[in-house]
Structure formats: C-alpha cells, structure tokens
Length: 295
Image (cartoon, rainbow, N blue to C red; front, side):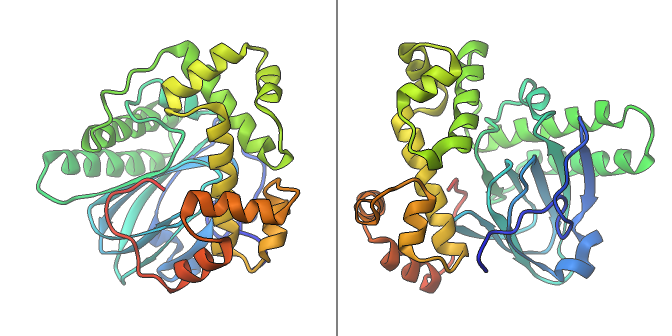
C-alpha cells in the first residue's frame, strides 16, 4: 500500500466528527468487515479505549506487535497506527471518543492521554474485573440511546483509564494545569508541522509563550526537550512509512521534513542503530515483540 489507511470507524470513510462525538461497540459487530484481522490504520480525529473480553491474538501499535490473551486493554490516541489479528471468537468493547471531548476525560483520568499504551493481565488482580464491568456497562448504556448517554459513558471511560494508570504504575505523575495545557498544545503543533522542519523558536512563537516556559512544560509533562519531541515525531513517522508503505527511503526522508536523504539516514541510524533500509528489512522479518509496552 502507498498510504496508511485512515478511517472514521473501522472500514468507514473518514468524515468530520460532530462536536462531542462518542461511539461504543463490540469488535464482533464488524466481524463481517475485518474477519478477525484489522490491517494497520489510524483515526484522525478520535481516540479509542479497547478492552478485550474474550480470545486473544496480536495487537499492533506503531512498530510494536504485542501478543495477548483476554483480558487486555489499550488506549490509542488519534493519528496512532494500530491494528490486530485475533483468534476466532475473540471480542472486545471499543469506546471511541472525539479529540474535542478528550480534555474532559483527561481532567478525570490518572493516565496521560498523549501516547498509546497496552496492558495485559499477567496475574490475578480485581482491577481487571472492575474494568471489564465498566466497559460492558458503557456498551449497555450506549445501546439505550437515551439522552445524556455521554454523561455516563465518559466518566466510565475515565475510570477505566485511571485503573490502567494504576496497573502501569503511572498514577504518581504530577501535572499542573498550566504546563499540561502548554505541553499538550505543543505536541498538537508538532503533529501538524513536523514535516516543515520548523525551529524550536517557531513553535514558541506559535504558542505565544517564552522559550523558558515551553521548555519547562515539555520537560515536566513529556520528560523531554522541545527539539527531542520534534525529532521523536519525525522518527515515528519515518518508522510508520518504512513499516506500512513501500515508499523509498529517499521519499520518506523528504516526507518527514529532511532536505538531504543522507542526513536522514544518519539521523535514523543514530536513533535506532541501523540505516532505514536495514531496519525495515529487519522489522518485516523479525518476531513479534512481547511485553506491556509503549512504542
């Protein structure tokens, strides 16, 4: 394929989302479309919480392939490539939340919502049963079609995400509203402009802030400097295109904002230990990666 597919809901052509868009369904409801295998794709305007209640298989998040057996749970923000290949009779509840609504969920969630995460049960913990019950409750409530469904489903989703934070040992992250808002907007701008090879000063200007405040917010919330965040985004896009398209390395270099393909190759090798072409071959030939992981 030449481009990574983008969908509204899986299998449906992208379209503008209504303000406050919310959708809940079972994976099995689209069995006639995916037949247990959802090819790598993304959603441009919404995030998804997915809780696997039955079965198992392999779940893809960017360049990580994660083997799992239910129960398992993931959070995938918009613009993140993901997919799955699962056994017969596997099922999951999926809550799709518009980016415009996500700040409301984030305000009640202990889990940072700016990056993907997948967790799998490795030992008995009552938290898994609680999450299962909450996700099934969200699905049942959504099916009622009653007014105010979002006022019930969104808090349920936020609670599941908070349980995920507990399980992933990230509940201790401290955030303040000012730096969080600034860092979130910085990340949004990087997603929009990373292909344009803009300077750190350009982003500071777009944010209407100061270099010190932007750097402080980036480090506090993301744990990295602004330049490193820009480079991470360019590297992520390069990996996506290497893994999921047949574009040449030279084409990918230009697509990710590099004017010199040779410099792109050095940039990529410094961060992965391999030239882009060698990395691509190794990823296509390699075994799935295990472990609860963030790409």
